[in-house]
Length: 161
Image (cartoon, rainbow, N blue to C red):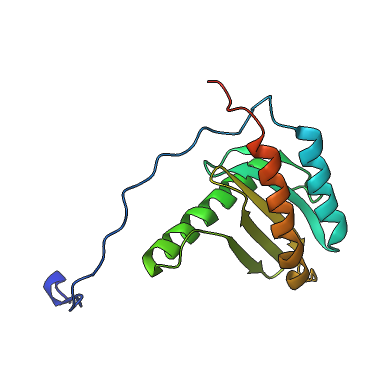
């Protein structure tokens, strides 16, 4: 039987320090000043431009759902939370490797994809697609959609608690 003292240990000290945790911005969820029709138009345009997109979720970095246009029966609240989790992991990878702010992450599964794109410091765009989706085409169009969404969201007033 192995003792705890026999377990391998790091031989070199870790270098660098992580920045202090940042405060989350105010949540976008339930904000009545958001331009929901214009946001819906952008999400629909992306879904129509890329064959194989089941839908999009606009969520906050806090994991709360803002809006969606999912067509596959997936729970939009769960996907908003998963997008925030993906963002959190990607953000930590970027910090640890000194590669800067999170921009995008894609997860491929046996039956499809989930791609998460940073919109601004408050919001994320999550795109759900089939396994046959043209990921390169998605990566070409989604950042433009994210930039348009950032403009729409930046013009909205903060939600009041």
